[in-house]
Length: 388
Image (cartoon, rainbow, N blue to C red; front, side, top):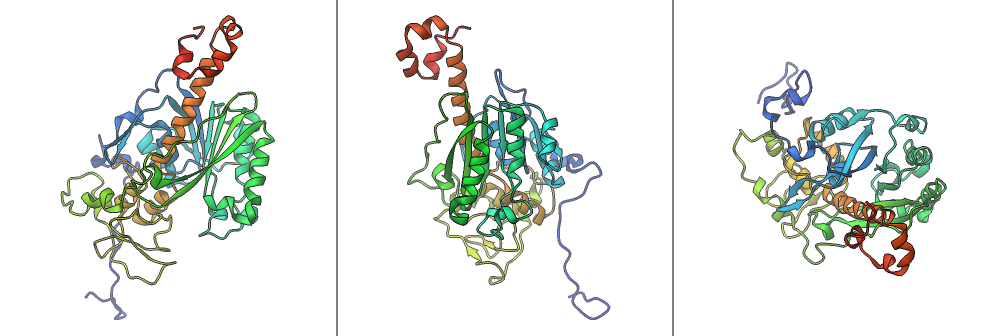
């Protein structure tokens, strides 16, 4: 073993992703890597979306669609991201590398929202650390506990039709639910009505025991409300081995993102907040943003999960690049909204807005002649009677 001049063992250098002058996009291995569907011209009659606290883009990717995951196709939705904002440089570069140049580096404040574009849909995973069961549970007393008011300010000034706010389920339990009640009450004061959706990832095909809380709002002048997405995998959860077993034996160094397949250290149990060894026939434990805190062991190999394995368990498609060091990538992945969960939410929102649009376009004559029939028609049927 190599030793330093003082006689102590020389520490092994940590492997990181290579640095490029213009960012990871200059890496020749990344050329042609990304799914072109994520860069296509938006579909006709798309709804404009503004994204606050966008992170690396998990929520946004889910709403856009146009990707496959574990053999399932998640179709492109007629939603267009017209602006995305986050204060983390890693997240912004990762977002733009994968989803196009939508994201801007910005420290969001209530005042800054007035200068943003007006959109049909507002989305935002406002920071969850102060509401998380694994965080300080500081609530509004934490440094980021009142950042939900940035979304509130946008709602008051721009009046989007629909709001999708996302956070951790523990927000509904913290202080007996008082924090969530206050947030919803504040949101309602901007002229909206809300419902709370708690989605359990495995029920929707996510191979990880992750729950997310979606606070869904509709402007008060719009009738009706989106339907909560129906579970697709009740009783048929996808186990971790089924999700990532093909990543165990990859040896081709020409594979793009290859360092994300191989960089995984051997881990010693006992140093984390309850280290976890995954069972091959069950869904994985919840992926955390801090890989040093709670160790996720591979279900069969004596090592931690790799960046790529963790991204797969979060439902990021393999084409999605995480270009930074292992720890920085783990942080982005752990903080992200699973794209497939976001997709089910986005699909419900789109179906609702399409129904609202179809109803608005029905001729006044037909509406007044057959009012009871209009109430019973679905979206496809309404389109036959549209005035345009």
